[in-house]
Image (tube, rainbow, N blue to C red):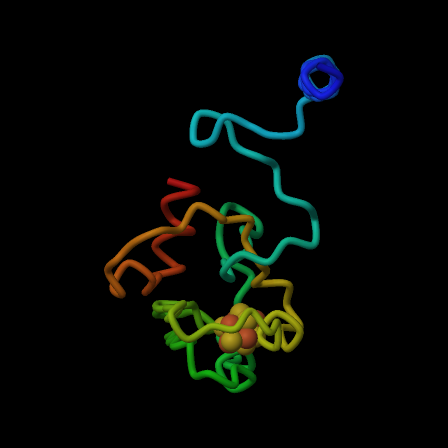
Length: 146
Ligand code: SF4
Ligand code: SF4
């Protein structure tokens, strides 16, 4: 008989403990978001794939020096530029990133003395196709500043 009441008491006690945790969490601040309907703002130090920084007049600050391309240990970056007719400086005509090989090491960003590239805050990348991770960063820049 004692064991019978002891089991009932133990069951009620565990129910009480469980419900108290449930109520406490119910009224505590929410720390999750309803992804994908809500998204988080990434921290300043978050590293997404690299992106060209938008400079003056929506153009890139890149001077086509090639330092980032050389600094990349994984051969992810491919860029090209040409001097426009009558122009003095080269202009960027191609900047592609093979993100499948990128280790987010940051060598490219560190090697750029012209504040032309930085890590993006992109964290929504998902695909089963490798090709979806080959980025045309110049086109992305144009899309952001039509
Ligand atoms: S290091 Fe900077 S300025 Fe030089 S090519 Fe790379 S992005 Fe352009
Ligand atoms: S972060 Fe590192 S691996 Fe990725 S593109 Fe830059 S240099 Fe290459």
